[in-house]
Image (cartoon, rainbow, N blue to C red; front, side):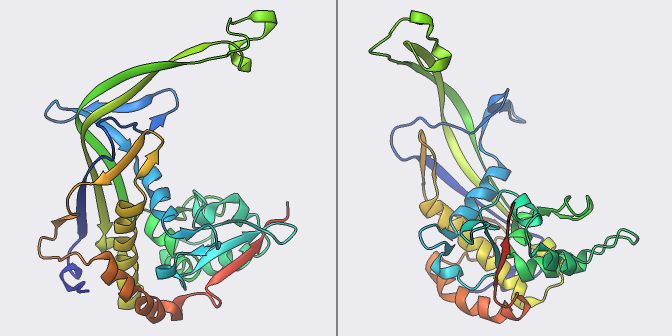
Length: 312
Protein backbone atom coordinates (compact mmCIF):
# COMPACT_ATOMS: atom_id res chain seq x y z
CA UNK A 1 0.00 0.00 0.00
CA UNK A 2 1.62 3.21 -1.20
CA UNK A 3 0.21 6.49 0.16
CA UNK A 4 3.13 8.58 -1.10
CA UNK A 5 1.16 10.20 -4.00
CA UNK A 6 -1.17 11.67 -1.37
CA UNK A 7 1.55 13.51 0.58
CA UNK A 8 0.98 16.87 -1.13
CA UNK A 9 -2.51 16.42 -2.59
CA UNK A 10 -5.24 18.56 -0.97
CA UNK A 11 -8.04 16.02 -1.59
CA UNK A 12 -8.53 12.41 -2.58
CA UNK A 13 -11.64 12.28 -4.75
CA UNK A 14 -13.32 8.98 -5.60
CA UNK A 15 -16.51 7.94 -7.35
CA UNK A 16 -18.41 4.74 -8.03
CA UNK A 17 -21.29 4.01 -10.38
CA UNK A 18 -24.17 2.21 -8.68
CA UNK A 19 -27.21 0.39 -9.98
CA UNK A 20 -30.25 -1.36 -8.47
CA UNK A 21 -29.49 -4.93 -7.54
CA UNK A 22 -32.77 -5.97 -9.18
CA UNK A 23 -34.90 -4.11 -11.67
CA UNK A 24 -34.45 -0.44 -12.47
CA UNK A 25 -36.26 1.45 -9.67
CA UNK A 26 -34.82 2.76 -6.42
CA UNK A 27 -36.11 4.71 -3.43
CA UNK A 28 -34.15 7.83 -2.40
CA UNK A 29 -33.85 9.30 1.04
CA UNK A 30 -36.80 11.46 2.06
CA UNK A 31 -36.94 14.63 4.14
CA UNK A 32 -39.76 15.90 6.40
CA UNK A 33 -42.08 18.35 4.58
CA UNK A 34 -40.00 17.91 1.42
CA UNK A 35 -40.02 14.28 0.34
CA UNK A 36 -37.45 13.32 -2.26
CA UNK A 37 -34.78 15.98 -2.89
CA UNK A 38 -35.04 16.63 -6.63
CA UNK A 39 -33.33 19.58 -8.29
CA UNK A 40 -32.06 20.86 -11.63
CA UNK A 41 -28.38 20.42 -12.42
CA UNK A 42 -26.27 23.27 -13.90
CA UNK A 43 -27.05 22.04 -17.42
CA UNK A 44 -30.75 21.55 -16.73
CA UNK A 45 -30.59 17.80 -16.13
CA UNK A 46 -33.03 16.44 -13.58
CA UNK A 47 -31.09 15.43 -10.46
CA UNK A 48 -31.93 13.60 -7.25
CA UNK A 49 -30.15 13.31 -3.91
CA UNK A 50 -30.21 9.58 -3.14
CA UNK A 51 -28.21 9.71 0.12
CA UNK A 52 -27.07 12.81 2.00
CA UNK A 53 -23.63 13.46 3.49
CA UNK A 54 -24.96 13.20 7.05
CA UNK A 55 -26.65 9.87 6.33
CA UNK A 56 -23.54 8.56 4.59
CA UNK A 57 -21.44 9.36 7.66
CA UNK A 58 -23.71 7.09 9.70
CA UNK A 59 -23.52 4.34 7.09
CA UNK A 60 -19.73 4.53 6.86
CA UNK A 61 -19.61 4.12 10.63
CA UNK A 62 -22.12 1.26 10.65
CA UNK A 63 -19.91 -0.95 8.46
CA UNK A 64 -17.22 -0.73 11.17
CA UNK A 65 -19.32 -2.29 13.90
CA UNK A 66 -19.89 -5.94 14.86
CA UNK A 67 -23.27 -5.73 16.60
CA UNK A 68 -23.20 -9.37 17.68
CA UNK A 69 -19.95 -8.97 19.63
CA UNK A 70 -20.47 -5.27 20.46
CA UNK A 71 -17.04 -4.41 19.12
CA UNK A 72 -15.13 -3.17 16.09
CA UNK A 73 -15.08 -5.52 13.13
CA UNK A 74 -11.86 -7.51 13.03
CA UNK A 75 -9.68 -5.26 10.79
CA UNK A 76 -10.36 -2.22 13.03
CA UNK A 77 -9.89 -3.78 16.45
CA UNK A 78 -7.64 -1.67 18.64
CA UNK A 79 -9.01 1.68 17.50
CA UNK A 80 -10.15 4.05 20.27
CA UNK A 81 -13.84 4.62 20.96
CA UNK A 82 -16.20 5.26 23.87
CA UNK A 83 -18.68 2.70 25.14
CA UNK A 84 -21.65 3.67 27.30
CA UNK A 85 -23.12 1.44 29.98
CA UNK A 86 -26.44 1.96 31.73
CA UNK A 87 -27.16 2.10 35.44
CA UNK A 88 -27.16 -1.70 35.64
CA UNK A 89 -23.80 -1.99 33.85
CA UNK A 90 -25.30 -3.25 30.57
CA UNK A 91 -24.15 -1.96 27.15
CA UNK A 92 -26.28 1.03 26.13
CA UNK A 93 -24.62 2.66 23.12
CA UNK A 94 -21.22 3.81 21.85
CA UNK A 95 -19.51 6.67 20.04
CA UNK A 96 -19.26 4.72 16.78
CA UNK A 97 -23.01 4.31 16.40
CA UNK A 98 -24.25 7.52 18.02
CA UNK A 99 -25.25 10.04 15.32
CA UNK A 100 -23.37 12.88 17.05
CA UNK A 101 -20.49 10.72 18.22
CA UNK A 102 -18.90 12.21 21.38
CA UNK A 103 -21.59 14.90 21.45
CA UNK A 104 -24.24 12.27 22.20
CA UNK A 105 -26.18 13.15 25.39
CA UNK A 106 -25.55 9.58 26.54
CA UNK A 107 -21.82 10.41 26.56
CA UNK A 108 -21.68 14.07 27.57
CA UNK A 109 -24.05 13.40 30.50
CA UNK A 110 -22.30 10.20 31.55
CA UNK A 111 -20.10 9.57 34.53
CA UNK A 112 -16.58 9.47 33.12
CA UNK A 113 -16.99 12.16 30.44
CA UNK A 114 -15.01 14.63 32.57
CA UNK A 115 -11.76 12.94 31.52
CA UNK A 116 -12.59 13.55 27.85
CA UNK A 117 -13.66 17.13 28.58
CA UNK A 118 -10.42 17.76 30.46
CA UNK A 119 -8.35 16.48 27.52
CA UNK A 120 -10.16 18.88 25.16
CA UNK A 121 -8.94 21.67 27.46
CA UNK A 122 -11.48 24.31 26.51
CA UNK A 123 -11.01 27.64 28.28
CA UNK A 124 -13.82 30.15 27.78
CA UNK A 125 -11.46 32.98 28.70
CA UNK A 126 -9.06 32.31 25.82
CA UNK A 127 -9.26 31.88 22.05
CA UNK A 128 -10.16 28.29 21.17
CA UNK A 129 -7.09 26.11 20.59
CA UNK A 130 -7.86 23.24 18.18
CA UNK A 131 -4.70 21.24 18.94
CA UNK A 132 -5.89 19.72 22.26
CA UNK A 133 -9.22 18.84 20.62
CA UNK A 134 -7.72 16.83 17.75
CA UNK A 135 -5.35 15.04 20.15
CA UNK A 136 -8.29 14.21 22.43
CA UNK A 137 -10.33 12.88 19.51
CA UNK A 138 -7.44 10.68 18.37
CA UNK A 139 -7.08 9.48 21.94
CA UNK A 140 -10.73 8.70 22.62
CA UNK A 141 -12.70 8.51 19.35
CA UNK A 142 -10.93 8.38 16.00
CA UNK A 143 -14.28 8.42 14.16
CA UNK A 144 -14.89 11.98 15.31
CA UNK A 145 -11.73 13.06 13.47
CA UNK A 146 -13.02 11.50 10.26
CA UNK A 147 -16.71 12.37 10.41
CA UNK A 148 -16.57 15.68 12.23
CA UNK A 149 -17.69 16.83 15.65
CA UNK A 150 -19.70 19.69 17.13
CA UNK A 151 -19.39 19.66 20.90
CA UNK A 152 -21.80 22.50 21.57
CA UNK A 153 -22.66 20.84 24.90
CA UNK A 154 -19.23 22.12 26.01
CA UNK A 155 -19.02 25.23 23.81
CA UNK A 156 -20.28 26.30 20.40
CA UNK A 157 -16.77 26.86 19.01
CA UNK A 158 -15.66 23.24 19.57
CA UNK A 159 -16.16 21.79 16.13
CA UNK A 160 -14.35 20.09 13.28
CA UNK A 161 -15.58 19.63 9.69
CA UNK A 162 -15.74 16.20 8.10
CA UNK A 163 -12.44 14.83 6.83
CA UNK A 164 -14.33 12.03 5.08
CA UNK A 165 -17.45 12.99 3.13
CA UNK A 166 -19.68 10.86 0.94
CA UNK A 167 -22.96 11.36 -0.87
CA UNK A 168 -24.99 9.62 -3.57
CA UNK A 169 -26.88 11.37 -6.33
CA UNK A 170 -28.69 10.37 -9.51
CA UNK A 171 -29.02 12.18 -12.82
CA UNK A 172 -31.40 11.91 -15.75
CA UNK A 173 -34.10 10.86 -13.34
CA UNK A 174 -37.71 9.90 -14.01
CA UNK A 175 -40.44 9.24 -11.48
CA UNK A 176 -41.75 5.69 -11.28
CA UNK A 177 -45.17 6.28 -9.73
CA UNK A 178 -47.09 3.42 -8.16
CA UNK A 179 -49.34 2.74 -5.21
CA UNK A 180 -51.21 0.18 -3.24
CA UNK A 181 -53.73 -0.38 -0.52
CA UNK A 182 -53.58 -1.58 3.05
CA UNK A 183 -56.45 -4.02 3.26
CA UNK A 184 -58.57 -4.60 6.35
CA UNK A 185 -60.31 -7.94 5.83
CA UNK A 186 -62.47 -7.46 8.95
CA UNK A 187 -63.65 -3.85 8.72
CA UNK A 188 -62.97 -2.60 5.23
CA UNK A 189 -65.04 0.59 5.40
CA UNK A 190 -63.46 3.65 7.02
CA UNK A 191 -65.42 4.91 9.98
CA UNK A 192 -67.11 1.57 10.57
CA UNK A 193 -68.28 1.56 14.19
CA UNK A 194 -66.28 4.71 14.88
CA UNK A 195 -62.95 3.12 13.96
CA UNK A 196 -60.74 5.32 11.80
CA UNK A 197 -57.91 4.84 9.32
CA UNK A 198 -55.66 6.81 11.65
CA UNK A 199 -56.15 4.07 14.22
CA UNK A 200 -55.23 1.44 11.62
CA UNK A 201 -58.74 0.32 10.64
CA UNK A 202 -60.29 0.16 7.15
CA UNK A 203 -58.86 -0.17 3.67
CA UNK A 204 -56.28 2.59 3.15
CA UNK A 205 -55.03 3.35 -0.37
CA UNK A 206 -51.62 5.02 -0.74
CA UNK A 207 -49.39 6.38 -3.49
CA UNK A 208 -45.67 5.73 -3.89
CA UNK A 209 -42.90 7.39 -5.86
CA UNK A 210 -39.69 5.64 -6.80
CA UNK A 211 -37.15 6.77 -9.38
CA UNK A 212 -35.01 5.60 -12.26
CA UNK A 213 -31.76 7.19 -13.36
CA UNK A 214 -27.97 6.96 -13.37
CA UNK A 215 -26.66 6.68 -9.80
CA UNK A 216 -23.19 7.77 -8.65
CA UNK A 217 -21.57 7.67 -5.21
CA UNK A 218 -18.94 10.33 -4.51
CA UNK A 219 -16.31 10.34 -1.75
CA UNK A 220 -13.94 13.10 -0.64
CA UNK A 221 -11.06 12.59 1.80
CA UNK A 222 -9.77 16.00 2.89
CA UNK A 223 -6.04 15.29 3.01
CA UNK A 224 -5.14 18.91 3.74
CA UNK A 225 -7.39 18.87 6.80
CA UNK A 226 -5.87 15.59 8.01
CA UNK A 227 -2.33 16.95 7.60
CA UNK A 228 -3.45 20.15 9.33
CA UNK A 229 -4.33 18.17 12.45
CA UNK A 230 -0.57 17.94 13.05
CA UNK A 231 -0.79 14.44 14.49
CA UNK A 232 2.23 12.96 12.69
CA UNK A 233 2.76 10.47 9.88
CA UNK A 234 1.52 7.40 11.76
CA UNK A 235 -1.84 8.96 12.62
CA UNK A 236 -2.24 10.49 9.15
CA UNK A 237 -1.61 7.15 7.42
CA UNK A 238 -4.07 5.44 9.76
CA UNK A 239 -6.82 8.02 9.14
CA UNK A 240 -6.43 7.69 5.37
CA UNK A 241 -6.35 3.87 5.48
CA UNK A 242 -9.43 3.68 7.71
CA UNK A 243 -11.25 6.07 5.36
CA UNK A 244 -10.37 3.99 2.30
CA UNK A 245 -11.41 0.80 4.10
CA UNK A 246 -14.76 2.29 5.13
CA UNK A 247 -15.52 3.38 1.57
CA UNK A 248 -14.68 0.01 0.05
CA UNK A 249 -16.48 -1.93 2.79
CA UNK A 250 -19.57 0.23 2.28
CA UNK A 251 -19.53 -0.39 -1.47
CA UNK A 252 -19.18 -4.12 -0.84
CA UNK A 253 -21.57 -4.70 2.07
CA UNK A 254 -23.48 -1.50 2.91
CA UNK A 255 -25.54 -0.67 -0.17
CA UNK A 256 -28.96 -1.85 1.02
CA UNK A 257 -29.99 1.68 1.93
CA UNK A 258 -33.73 1.03 2.28
CA UNK A 259 -36.23 -1.73 1.54
CA UNK A 260 -36.70 -0.39 -1.99
CA UNK A 261 -33.14 0.86 -2.44
CA UNK A 262 -30.85 -2.14 -2.69
CA UNK A 263 -27.86 -1.17 -4.83
CA UNK A 264 -24.59 -2.62 -6.07
CA UNK A 265 -21.41 -1.13 -7.48
CA UNK A 266 -21.14 -1.30 -11.26
CA UNK A 267 -17.49 -1.33 -12.25
CA UNK A 268 -14.48 -0.18 -10.24
CA UNK A 269 -14.11 2.56 -7.65
CA UNK A 270 -12.52 5.36 -9.68
CA UNK A 271 -9.81 7.75 -8.46
CA UNK A 272 -10.65 11.19 -9.83
CA UNK A 273 -7.85 13.08 -8.09
CA UNK A 274 -4.86 12.77 -7.73
CA UNK A 275 -4.64 10.71 -10.90
CA UNK A 276 -1.29 9.15 -9.90
CA UNK A 277 -2.75 7.43 -6.83
CA UNK A 278 -3.29 3.68 -7.16
CA UNK A 279 -6.15 2.64 -4.93
CA UNK A 280 -5.23 -0.26 -2.61
CA UNK A 281 -7.63 -3.18 -2.50
CA UNK A 282 -9.70 -3.88 0.58
CA UNK A 283 -7.56 -6.99 1.12
CA UNK A 284 -4.37 -4.90 1.10
CA UNK A 285 -5.94 -2.42 3.51
CA UNK A 286 -6.94 -5.19 5.91
CA UNK A 287 -3.40 -6.53 5.88
CA UNK A 288 -1.96 -3.08 6.58
CA UNK A 289 -4.45 -1.86 9.20
CA UNK A 290 -3.22 -3.88 12.23
CA UNK A 291 0.29 -2.47 11.79
CA UNK A 292 -1.00 1.07 11.27
CA UNK A 293 -3.18 0.80 14.38
CA UNK A 294 -0.25 -0.46 16.43
CA UNK A 295 2.03 2.33 15.19
CA UNK A 296 -0.49 5.03 16.16
CA UNK A 297 -1.62 3.37 19.40
CA UNK A 298 0.83 5.43 21.50
CA UNK A 299 -1.66 8.29 21.01
CA UNK A 300 -4.72 6.26 22.07
CA UNK A 301 -6.31 6.00 25.49
CA UNK A 302 -5.15 3.06 27.59
CA UNK A 303 -7.16 0.89 27.22
CA UNK A 304 -8.31 2.05 23.77
CA UNK A 305 -11.96 1.52 24.68
CA UNK A 306 -13.09 4.10 27.24
CA UNK A 307 -16.17 3.15 29.26
CA UNK A 308 -18.55 5.75 30.69
CA UNK A 309 -21.75 5.23 32.67
CA UNK A 310 -25.07 6.86 31.84
CA UNK A 311 -27.06 6.56 35.06
CA UNK A 312 -30.09 8.77 34.42
